[in-house]
Image 1 (cartoon, rainbow, N blue to C red):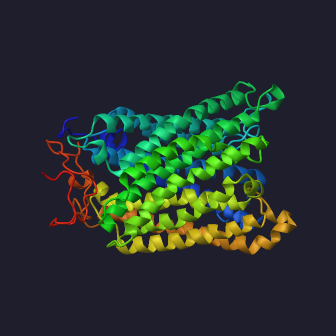
Image 2 (cartoon, rainbow, N blue to C red; image 1 turned 60 degrees about the vertical axis):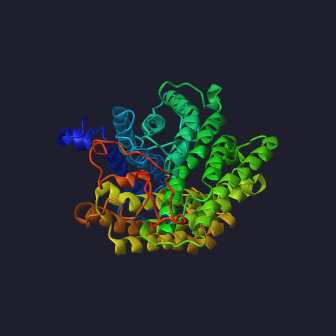
Image 3 (tube, helix red, strand yellow; image 1 turned 120 degrees about the horizontal axis):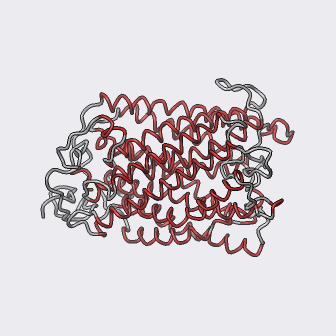
Length: 554
């Protein structure tokens, strides 16, 4: 559409092809689903702390309900919070602005990707109301728990769960294609590949990783659908099928998926660090090389999730080695981030505080992952709460600390207004404290041998010694969930009535800050920007200013 093209309500806010509005739609969807996922987390922690006691606002969490809640929680937080927030929101909103384009390469395809994800979220919610209730086979959907073995009845909750995943995966695949084509074909004049910001590079790495990993799982999802609807036997032993095949196909995607969520946070954190330390990204080319190595290695580590599954012990050693080796490229990237903090003039504004929280918490997740990469240690720890703690120390920093850093940083660009500083600082402080108080005790509980996914821990006398730890962790979890109301209040109030923001309140170099806040339809005026330098021209000796915008005239 032309710059001055008028739009009605439906074409502007609902069925929009503008990448910025689609980014906002993904952001709002992820917030709504996070509320749903947070409610399931509340129910899980209530049952662990107070088994056989009715939960306020729900009732008694019976074992079958508990399994469904576990399934919903993992599915929601990974596929309907993490993927829209860290893959779709920054990709949709930022890529055209950061490369100097007016929109995505395929605007209508971009719109379709949102509505596919939205439809998947609706199907998942609808599974609450079908006969038999929602899926209860865990968020990993292991067969044969997730497959029908005869014609006595279709597990409609499982069917809707699978269809919701299929829509989410297809949506992300279409979105990734759009991101790649946009960066390759729609870069502004002068925007060479070595002038791309780290956010764009990491989003591309995320898209490529997803592309290469998701195909086998999409096939597996439709195979499992046929097992449920057509009574085939791909994963059913009674019909000659192999349930372990689902595990292999799931984790071939499942472990790279962690990096699909992690890469965008790395890119955004590097860009935020550069702005608030007033320093260039340390080791730009080293980081790109490390990222490429990490993408390649991510496809040869999946079986460390299966050391307890009957996997041939001869395969344990090579998968242990690759799992530990993949920590090396990520360690180089993280240490590059720490190097940027050294001898820097840090401005401790809210986006940087979230990045520092991400670095502190993810470091714990990375170090504890080394134990799980060793077959000898993992065989003991795998089924325990140690894995729950480790998993949340990797995913929560990536999705939430990274997501909040992005929202707080780009909120002025997205809405043209500022967030409340006081509420933001209280939010980060309480989130950091409550998160660690929730999951740090679970390392202790897990090392002590408490098995996860137990609906009634009071049934096992040996777990009574952990009752105090579980109550403490649950109260911290309830506090963590309640703390997010500060963000919701701040977000809504500031978007509507916050003080107006300058076009570039941070004196940042990257191209999106040369557009108006919020950017108009088409992003730029009549002429697209011309890029004359790299994205990290900070604190250069001999320069009058400590920054140099990418679109500044030479």
